[in-house]
Length: 225
Image (cartoon, rainbow, N blue to C red):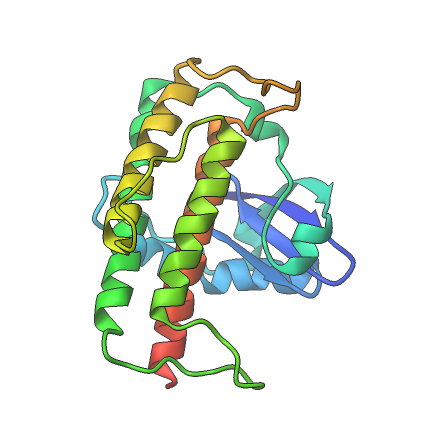
């Protein structure tokens, strides 16, 4: 059974596999969001097949159980899951740290493979001619990582100017370091102005979701270009 969290905005709903960071999809309502999660199960499974945590996702809707619902916000409507669930406040043990780090690494590898496979190709544009190219996607991912690390309370490292590969490497290194520090209680739960920082579980779920969302975007736009 896959435990699912539902994050519902007015026009967009996310279904989120709570125990499997990064496996989250959206739809116009709860039913279509859960169907999208089911549809993407094999793609998520393919990403983590190189880890010791590989599994075959259920292909029946009755194997997906909604255990919590949250109201979404403007970020939900924009297209990103933005609301923590009760599980995100749970402390993580060393076994959890190892598991999530393995899934995070596998997701980065999937993103790198997608970028490499699309090298020299023009990605399919949207219906109005929009859509980032590979370099723009890469820059966007790095900028998002900087924002996520700030929400966690971890410093984003400086990279060589004009070197996206170096920036990506340093961002990933900081993500691993910050995640480990947060799991081990080395980061205060509140920022200097008193605002709550992201918990380690919410942080890793958000980071992996974002990298896989763009991995699958590249794959889809390459396939139909």
